Image: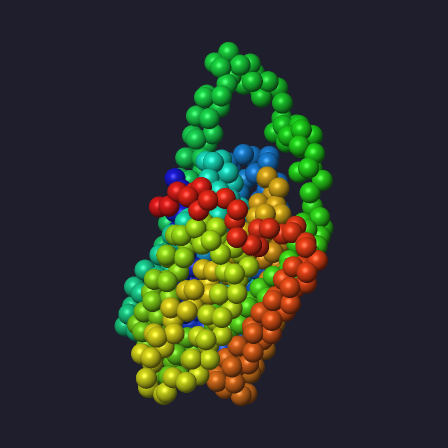
Amino acid sequence: MRPGYLYFSIFLWLVSTGGRFTAPFLQHIAGFDDTLLGIIFAVQILLFSLLGSIGGIWADKLELRYPDKGRIGCLVIGTLLGTISFEIHAIVQFLVKDDHMMATALHITARLMYASCSAILFPILDGITLSYLKTHNRDGTAYGQERLFGAVAWAIASALIGPILDSHGFNVFFWSAPLGGTLSIITFIKYANDSLSFSEEKKEEVMPETEMVESKDLEIEASPIDGAACAKEESSPIQETNSLSLLRSMISTFSACGFIISSISLNMGTSVVENLIFLYFESLGGTNTICGLTVVVTVLFEIPIFHYAPHLLAYFGAATMQKIACFAYIIRVVGYTFVPQDHMALVLLFEPLHGVTYACSKTSSVEFAAAISPDGYESSGQGLLSMLLGFGSVTGVSFGGWIEDVFGPKVLYRSYAGIVAAGLVAFYVALACDGRSGNAKYKHLAKKQSSVHEQGNVV
C-alpha cells in the first residue's frame, strides 16, 4: 500500500471533523465571534507547531525501536483521541448548552484537545512518505505524487458534505467524525501490515536461508531496546542528530533564512484563508454547497502540481516554487476584496490560485526540510520546519480574527497580501546576497541538476 492512501483517509477524517467548515461550525454550534475564533485558531496552530515537532521526534524514536509499527501507532493514537475530543462538542450541544459559560469553556477545551491530538499527524505522515520513497528507491521529490491523494479526498469530502450541511445543519459532524476516524484507523493498520510484509520480503531476498535462521535466533536473545541501541551505534551521524543541529542547518545561509522568512509570512496569510475565509463567503451570500464547491476548484489545481512535483522541482527548483506560491496568494486575496455582495460565484475565478499556493509551498517546504534530514529523522526535520512556520500561522490568525471584527474582511485580506509581499522581497534579497558571495550550500533551493526523467515515476 502506498502512503497516498494514508493521506486520503486522514483528509477524509479532517473534513468529517469540520475541515474548512470549522469556523462556521463553531460560530453556529458554539456561538464564537470572529475575535474568539481568531484566538482559538491561533492557540490550535500554536499547539500544532509545538506538538508537531515533538510528535515527529517521538514517532521517529518509536520507529527505530519498533520498525514499521512506531509511526503508524502514533497515527492511530492521534486519530482515535482526536475523534473522541471532537465528540465533546456533541456532549456540550445536547447536555449543557443552556449554561453558556460552561458550554463555551467545554467547546474551547474540545478544540484544544482535538488540536493536541491531531498536531502530530502531518509531520509523521510526511516522514512515513519520505521513508517509503527511500525504501522503494524513489526520489524524495516524488512526495507530491503521494500527497495529491489527500487533495483528492479533501475535494470529494468537502463537495459531498456541503449540501448535507445545508439540509441537516452542522450537527452532521457529530456523526461523520467517528465514521471518518474508524476508516482512517483501518487504513493505518492495513498499511502497517503491508509494510511488515514488504520488509520480510526484502530480508528474504538479501539474506540466505541459513543466515535468516541464525539472525532469528539472535533476535530471540536480544531485547528491542538492545537492538535499537546497536542500530544507533552503527550509525553515528543519526546518533548525533538533534533538533538543534537540524535548526542550525536550516538557518546556515542567507537563502535558507530568506526561504523561512518568506514561508512564515505566507503561512500568516494562508492561516487566515484556511480558517476564516468561509465566514467571508457567507457574508457574500454563499451557501455551504458553494463553499464546498470552492474546495473542489482549488483541488483541481493542486492535483496536477502534486502529481508533477518531481518534474516541477527539477525544472524550477524549490525557490521558484516558493515565489510562485507567494504571487498566487497575493493576487487571489486582493481579488476577493473586489467581489460584490451577492455575487459569490465570482470567487470561483480566484480559487484556482489557492491550489497553486498550497501545492507549490507545500512541495517546496517538504523538499527544503528533507534535504537537511538524515535517514531515520525525516519526521523530525518536517516537524521542526512545521514548528517554525507555525509561529507565522499563529500570528496571522490571532490578529486576523480581530482585524476582521474591527475593520472588516477587505482590510484584512489586503493587509495580509502586503505582509506576504514583504516576505517575498526579503527572500529575493537573501538569494541575491548568497548569489554575490557564491554560496552554493543550498543547491536544493535551485533547479535540480539531474534529468527530469530521473526524478521518479508518475502515477
